Length: 306
Ligand SMILES: [Zn+2]
Image (cartoon, rainbow, N blue to C red; front, side):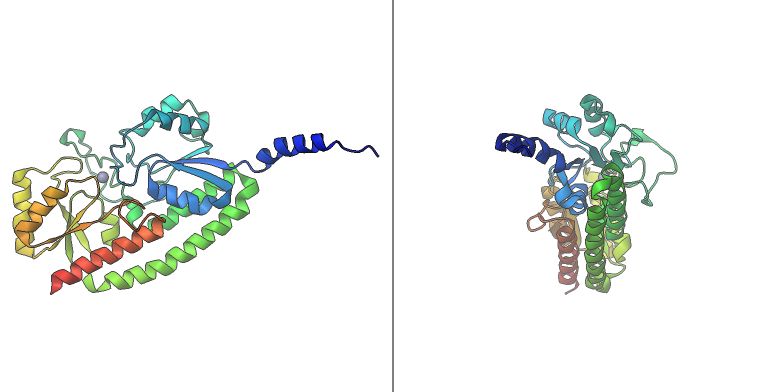
């Protein structure tokens, strides 16, 4: 038998090893989808997220580097329901990546399979409402996160069948943790059922519905339209009349406006985020973010009760 040259062995290892370990290249639009794609992909996927956790998902600062990332991606995980309509379509066009074309297996639109709320009966974009396809902030309900995780696992299996067992195992692990935490979260917020909370933007209808709260008074007169003095005066009188004492503000919203309203109504401003890493202590992922949201809202509501 001929001896195999060590040089050839080394060459073979160099050329074969990367192919054997090629990871699924995933681009997520926002950090909530990025977090769940990371949970499902585990060691088999390399996940890049475009939007920063402190950025408004409707108006993401589109950098040229995003085009390069999308060009190399096997799959893009997007929210859909027009969440990214202001910035993603142009990037996808420029990335010239047929794997991410609408209808291709690499185009994962997470709103498919989600029951959207607040779908307008008549579409009138002239009013400036940026929730024209229904409310796209559905990930604040953990049950929707479970649907999205299943959707992502199915899509990853289709794109990379050899790693499907890993994706399914990761899905089971994530779902089990999410279900046990969801029961805990419902208990934490149970004492506050029916209470009303003010938010800067209409980000929280799914969170509110899941936990029995009413988050339906907003500092913005319409989603995407900045607060006006006339509208804020109406919000203030409503807060006084109904004894509403909590205002939710996200990192990219004008906290000073919320503070001015809070000063007038003896309310508490609570810093929240819809994305992991948007507020301190939530960097680890979706479950840590939900933990923070549930506990900070419960704390503010219980302080206001006194
Ligand atoms: Zn919105």
